[in-house]
Image (cartoon, rainbow, N blue to C red; front, side):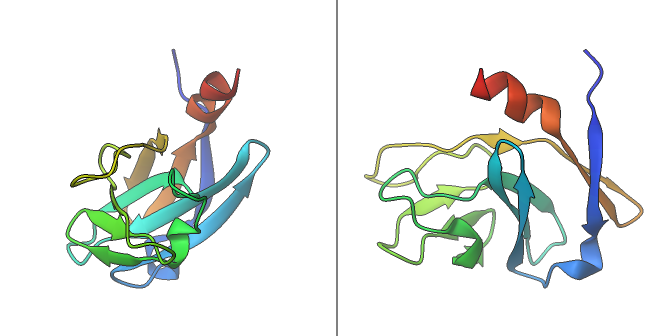
Length: 111
């Protein structure tokens, strides 16, 4: 199936080791930029207590929730360490710095 790619801005809109939040009809997603300029998108709520992952600390390819320090993999959406839970990951396309997310994956998961 072809993905419906939606433009969400430029990689320069997101600070290194930071995130920005994108509102979609299916809810908020957090788009992260690692220190290595990799970009990942996941749902913007921790599976533990719903904390805003977009406000967490990015390290390597994971983010630490600002509420209770759960560590979430940006690659898989799964909680790391002893914690159990996961959030959905959203495909991201980086074309020469312009960023796009695939909203189909959100809609399919919401059904």
